[in-house]
Length: 182
Length: 182
Image (tube, rainbow over all chains, first blue to last red; front, top):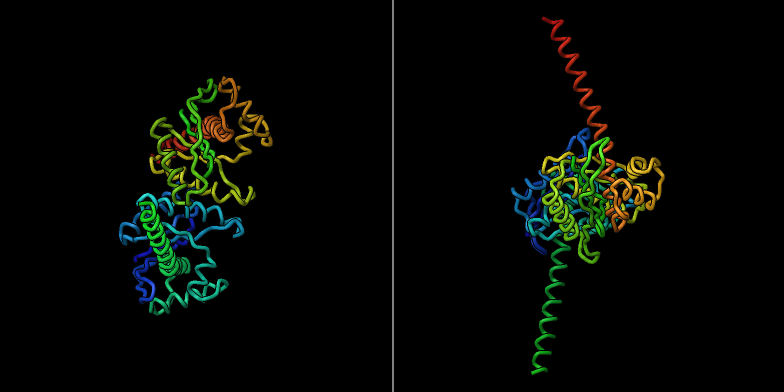
């Protein structure tokens, strides 16, 4: 499964692509940031984020997109820009019919390092280790986006297995019911 | 000038279209709300807002779009959804090359009622009076969107006059400079 992770932001929107599945080594594909000038007005900046996300989707053709979930408890001065950039990324993916999942920062940290309270350096170190890179992707927003993609491969895979098991169970119940009603 | 006002929200996104220019009577064109089901997931809801805004843009062909500016001081539990829905509306308009302007709630209230601290009922009453309607558009989100459009016609018009005056002045300065350099 190929996943695009997005760490949303107006000034720097981190993007990272990882291939992988549970229990197999992960493969690093690409990482970077979409930047929009701070002195552009909001419509131009959001349009810049949209065009950047579209380019990453076109170029890397991910099968799912993982976006960081924004909370109001975050730094209030940046939370609105983060929510706005994230919304643009979510819509770009949804418009293509791609599954989009939101993961909280602590879910990502827990998935990557084993602790929901790990710091940025620890996440970067583990990203580099898991992907067999010489160092974490730079800047930090790119590393965070890659961490989101890894988190999604691991958690999303587990979620998909649960969903399949539930469908399987529902099918069995249905066929028993059908047999009883005949 | 035809303006689409957008009072962003995930549950109810108010939209209202008004024709007008400064010093002329305003004409009410249409108002309504775009609703997305609270039990849909975020990608589906944002996609629903996008599709709704696109329909209003297609149907009414506004020349400008006015969106309410979101502040972090607002109710923190709803501010993120509001920022996300607003971002989608802003991108829809920017993608078509339409000018998008953000107005704060107090700018809108001051434009419509003369007081930045007017309550919703007062704004609704003035919207109905200015547009010669029997009552304010319903629900309140639709009335707020119409108020945004009116605010934009009045403020936007003033802003456009200032911009034109500045251009005119710059042209004169330029022609004086050109004459001096000959």
